[in-house]
Structure formats: C-alpha cells, structure tokens
Length: 556
Image 1 (cartoon, rainbow, N blue to C red):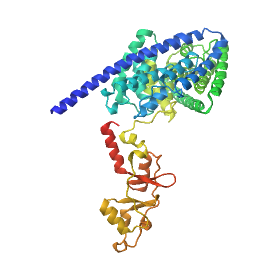
Image 2 (image 1 turned 45 degrees about the vertical axis):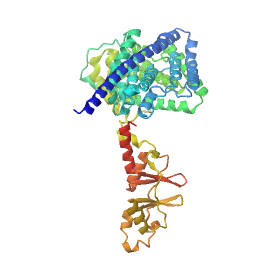
Image 3 (image 1 turned 90 degrees about the vertical axis):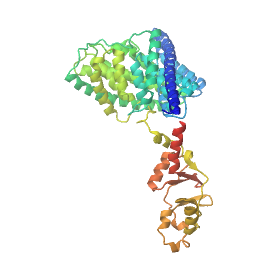
Image 4 (image 1 turned 180 degrees about the vertical axis):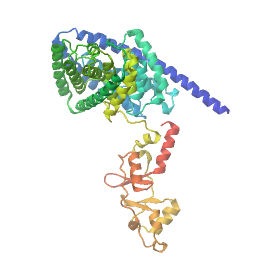
C-alpha cells in the first residue's frame, strides 16, 4: 500500500475508535440525565400527586400545562412542545445541528406536563434530551466525524434515551434507527447507537434499578394456530385504532398552533379534570393521569367487564389528545402502548381468552408499531419489557398486519417515507444554490444568424433566454434554428423562433421543482424570474449535477 494510503487508513481507524468512545460517553451522560428526570417525575411529583385529594388531582394537569406554556414561551424562546418529533425533524435537516438553546425550556415543560399528570410518556423528554446531548457532544468533538456522519451522535443519543427510560437497550437502538422513516431505517448510525444504548442502560439501572417497566401475570402456555389467527384479527383492529390515534393527535398538534395558549390550557384542563373525576368514580383510580403504567397490571385481570376496558380505551385516548392539544410536552410511545394493551384485552375477552397474557402483549406491539411505523422496535419493546420473548412470532404477525392497515398514516408528521440518496437530498436545496446570474441573453429582435454566430459558435450555447430589457419572454433553441433554411437566417428574428411555453422558475423553488420543469419542457436549462416576470438568471442541469459532486467532496 502506498504511504499516503497507509496514513489515510490509520487516520480513519483512529477516527472510528474515537467516535465509538464518544458514543459511550454520550450514553453515560444520557443515562444520568434520564435517571434524574425519571426520579423527579415518576418517583417524586407523580408519586406525591397520586396521594393527593381528588380536587388536587383534577386541577393538577391544568397547572402543569400552564407551567409548560410559560416555560416554552420564556425559557425555550417560544419553541414548540415537540420532543421526539424534534429529533426526527432535525435528523432530516442535514445542514443544521439540533438547537440547544430551547433544551432547558422544553425539558422543564416536559417535567411540568408529566409530573402534574399529563397523559403522555417520559420517553419524549428522554429522546429529546438524549438527542440534544449527542448533538452537543458531536459539535464539541466534530474533528472525529466526517461530513456524512453529521447525525451519528444525534441518533446515538436518542437511542440512549429510549434505552434508559424503558430499561430496554435493544429497543432503544431499533427505535432510534426506525423512527425517522416510515418505510426505511437509518442504518449508518447502528454501531454508535448500540454503544450509547448499552452505556446508557447500565448507567440508568445502576441508579434506578433493574425492575421491569411493567409486569403482565396472565397465563402464558404458548400459542397455536388459533392464536396466530387471533394475532391477525388484533393486527387489523390495532391498525384501525392507531390510524384513529394518528388523526386525533395530528388535530391536537394543529390546535397548539391555532389557539391562544390560555384557551387551549383552559380547555384541556377542564377536559382532564372531568376525566379524573370520572375515572375515580368508575375505577376508583385516576387512570387518566400520567403515562398509565398501572393500567398494564389492571388490564391483566381475567374478570374485567369488557365495557370497562372499552371505556378506559376512550378515556385514555381523550386524555392524551387533551394533554397534547393543551401544549403538553411529552412522548406518545407509552400512550400508544397503553392503547395497545387495552385493545388486546378487548380482543382476548371477545375470543374467550380473557385469562391469557398473549393478546394484551401482542396488542402493544401491533398498536405501537402501527402508530409510530416502527414494527421491529415495538416487537423488541414487548420482548424486553414484559419478559415474554415466546410471543415474538404472534407479535410480528400482529405488527405486520397493523402496518398494512395503517396505510401512509403516522403519529409523527416529521417522518419521511424512505432514506434519500445524495441527489434526492440536493433536490430539496433552494434553486439559488445552482442559479447563474451572469448570463448572456438574446433580444427578441436579433436574427437567427446573430443567434448562431454569437451564441452557438461564439459561446457554445445551445439554448439562450430571450429577454427584452429585463423581461423574460421565452427560450431560443439551436434545434429550432437548425430547422430553418440557411438563406432565411438573416431575415428571421428570434421572436419568431423562441419557445414561449417553456416555464420560468421562481426564486422560492427547490432544485427538484426546477428539474421537473426542465424534464417536462425537455430542456437542460431553466430561466428564473421574480414574481413580476423580471429575469434573474438560469439554472443549468449540469450545474445541479456539479453541485452534487462538490457537496459530496466537502461533506456539505
């Protein structure tokens, strides 16, 4: 190997080792952070809330939402309450690291929302905190990473957040890789995500303990062909239910931006207070408050009336929607799992298997997998958190079926369908990134002969914008001139030859818009004008391709 090649290989190996070590450090930092949040919310604020009088429990969510609104406005600089969605959105923004200024405010909003009984999950702040830590660490040590690895520690940090809060390191890895896309995975970050998840899990359980997240005690004798058929039925139901969940959560997120803060906080507070009174009256517990971990044990009882299960399904759906619409900051991973276990319990009772833990377990996988479009992570979550790996096969069947029922819906509006290649990512750039403004144009009263000698022969241009003063009129092409007899070149004007049907681009367009317009018009260049029709410049197909090569070489 040449000396230069050996040096390059050595540097690359050193960079990879450094990146792995930094991923482990990220995992430790995330594990510590999530442990603090979990102690404060779950074992502190929520534990105290559940021991309070009913009036306090009913009023607490509104107070939490108000505090969250103030934190987002004044501490986070007016940021949205997005947490897990913020991770997904920044993953797809290759040119910008996750902003760190809103992190304290968003985490404070999450703690206020969840600690006061908002019906969301700790995984939202955990994923967001992990992604922020990973992004910040990578920025500090950016010399260890190439341009193509700009989001490695963002993914690793998010994986570490999930691994810690659920005590499920494999779930953390798969979820962080799966959730950015509905039909793909971010496989480039696999090794850093594995390292960070393992380090975060070990750190978290060292502080908090290894007790499982929830326990289902129903009988688990195995499964047969009838149960596999039941898994398909449950998958169909879960796909439909998750689709409904996606619709109402999208509506709730829209309310966040359309209603004034005081109106949505007040409305959500009234709804959540009413649900608290209702659940205490019906179930003798405020099942609408908090993430809902206690519902997993409640749904495990064999003698439950199916009407009570169905009612709680609707109550939890309403509680999560109200919390989200009120501007609550939290995750919907666990709310999806709660809906899944309740739906599984309904199906189990409907098919005469109320004493079996099979249907609630695979209901979690089917509902969660469909909602977030993460079937692999949902199946692994079930295996890790319930200790029932025997049910992986029916869980996979239920999750696959629910994916088919889900169609293109997802609870996250920031996911993309599949991973984009280099050209696809470049196509999302603004048209200005390939715009040439120093362009030779031809006036409409020039002759065909002048066009040929000046532009074709003199400057080797095959297509030239026709501009009268500063107004774009059309495009003159060599192929159109070549169809004329040579003897009429001196008599024929460009105005008589130009193509007026070729569209003009706008500065607001993306490169994809320009490429589509050029393909439709069968040309290799596109004139760009402002809204008043004033000529600005041209975009050349060859410049778009050249831009792709330049950005790849520089890691841009």
